[in-house]
Image (cartoon, rainbow, N blue to C red; front, side, top):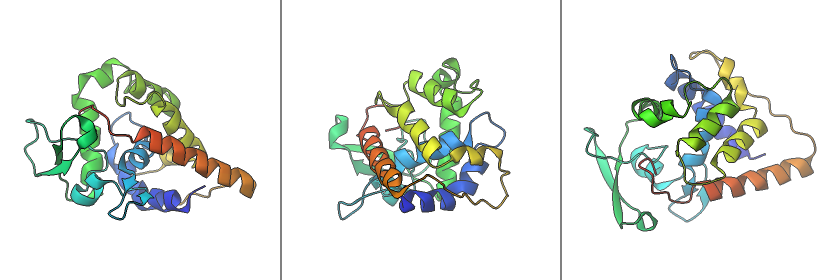
Length: 201
């Protein structure tokens, strides 16, 4: 298991829980999405969680673009694999603002309701609904989310209160299993975060 991911979870857990309050979105799913969508290469080309260009330049942890509906600040970032050299992305004051806007993004886009994202009774069903709704073009998106939820015991987030202190104890067997799991999920994350053509990418 990755210490970098563990630290990312602990640092953002309270905000993730707060961002889905009064909705039927699972914090565990939101956290898994945040891990995947915020990952990328830093200024030195090193892969890391929360190191993506949109995070570094705009506190944008989900790569949501600034279309004509967006009235806030925006920044132009290079997106050569997205069909055009530059795209505009939403700029947020903080990670919490990014998380809240991501929740709103799912609410106002009717296809997520239509495909059962908000009716899902379990985190696993919610990841599958996101996949069906076309959130990501990756065929492994739901699988990657479920893998992160399982490996990092993210369902513990689902029973926490917004203002509660949050601590996770990670237990996963032998060092060999830990190393294999960390490698496997890094591959899934790398596959999932390849630039996409959806509006949130």
